[in-house]
Length: 316
Ligand code: PMP
Image (cartoon, rainbow, N blue to C red; front, side, top):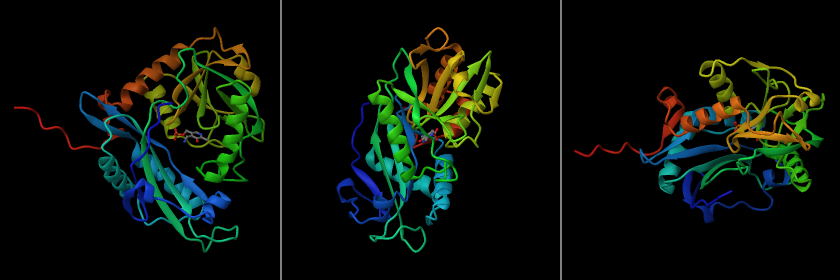
């Protein structure tokens, strides 16, 4: 993963050099996982010399919902957060793809596990970023995690709560140390939920199926995008329903989606090839549509993209 470093951060209400964006060791969120975050991507379009942020308003809406669940009051609307982000990105001046991380957290330096009467803070930073999982031509080889996905009745599953990512970290490391690229994770009901950091889709006899929002999944912005594109652009039926473990063994295609992973085919599950072990046709079609769309090459969906820089003036 080609990953650069941020030069600036939005911190304590203004843009500062990244070296000045620091917190103390007693910070509540560092001790208790009482933060929420987001993850967005900016895509560089070389022809237009433009950086496009994908669905920032939707990402910040979910970010504010996550904050609300954790009683983190932020004095900003989603629209204001988009403007702060655009200022930050212009200051960074990226001319390449980037990843954006907003983080809201309980900031008081104190001992005491609770959410009330603790101060809140917001930071946003962004860094140059290639792809997240190696988009291996061969597709990903995954296993089933021995960990269950954190239950919505334990920690809000539809919120991106920092503490809940201990679950994702356990899942990812177990998978990687066992030789897998990722892991499929079951929820406490024993049905498929998602992976450490992406939503899962399967294809059976031309129908695309994905776990429902009540399967302890994060309500992914990419998931929502893919469901829409499959139905409206590719005319493919999409069903949201529980998926059993053994269904995964007998599907025609499996793919992951998320801001980080984008779209990644799973071609092997626990040493069993998925169908004939290569990326399937629906995964290929949705992947190529997604990749051109996020770079601004699909006119109809330019509304999902927010340009960072002023338009180039046409040469006379
Ligand atoms: N599930 C989890 C647990 C995640 O961390 C992510 C990444 N944010 C996703 C799914 C995908 O969500 P999105 O498409 O909004 O990036």
